[in-house]
Image 1 (cartoon, rainbow, N blue to C red):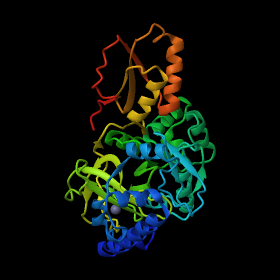
Image 2 (image 1 turned 90 degrees about the horizontal axis):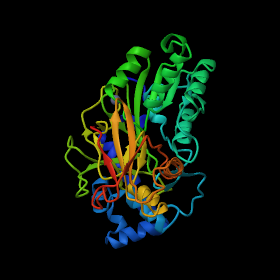
Image 3 (image 1 turned 135 degrees about the vertical axis):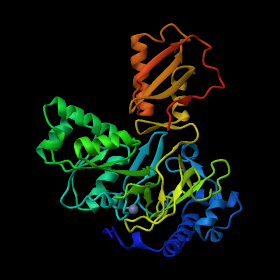
Image 4 (image 1 turned 180 degrees about the vertical axis):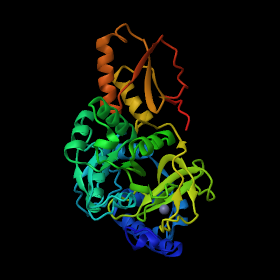
Length: 417
Ligand SMILES: [Zn+2]
């Protein structure tokens, strides 16, 4: 049996359920006392908090989607009243929406399980190529790497040329970031005259925020000798699941309760069936119960040969609802509405497709006034779009007035999952 991060990873299912149910009822009880919003949710749904005793009881509560959370936070900034007002918050993150989240405590094992399972430890020098400002990714992955003893190079989203330089100069052994960015770094290294496999010591990569396609994975592993691992989480709830050396499904973190539900009813589906991943992070700071990720997956209950006993989720099969991820970042209809309001209620539509392994974001707008489509207008529009949505537009398309019907979706996702 491989080494495990801690004893929890080999708990029997019964033991895990007992401990998690205890934590859950404690969290609900505390949340009902400390968070006015949670009290209101329970009271409105006529639920006695003492009746939420186990994970099965969670079905009595509504699922909160990212869109819903944005609305709730707009009504009651910054955390919709879901925070524990008695605990000082050391860091505030934001993710597109905007959604604000308080940082969970430094004692939380955030991402450490994932890095440990990927074999990262004190001998590693890890390049953390996730953004360090505003979004949670950079800092939370950073502290996870520190918790397994790795030395971190906080390179963030610096240019691929700088990343190559760091990999060479600092003898980096592991990469943490998106797969597409590692691809560009490899291409850049080639342009700079390096042989990635021979010249560098980078032999491990942990990916999040973007899908890792099988042919990409094969190429990283075969062509460049990089052992790859996938990690899955969300800013609202932290780390959710991670891959072990078996690379067959992602183990659910011991600190989270994952339900796979029918998005229409909020009820759990049978093991093996596809449904929405709904996450409850057991903690005493942010009382977000049943966060609906919008991602589709199914649960694997078979035992994993690695020795971890937790159930696994079988990767991500797609997205429900209208919010979509482009290059690892969400675009939500609420953001597009915000852009429309800045441009005189301009009729527009975002269209996401995929060319090779890359997401392509096209924005279609109606030419309802003469300045629309001029270089100055387009530059300004792209700038504001990026400020609000974080993602860069790849293509613009100008249509005559009336071409986008009011009943059409604001975001059209043409990608095949
Ligand atoms: Zn495993």
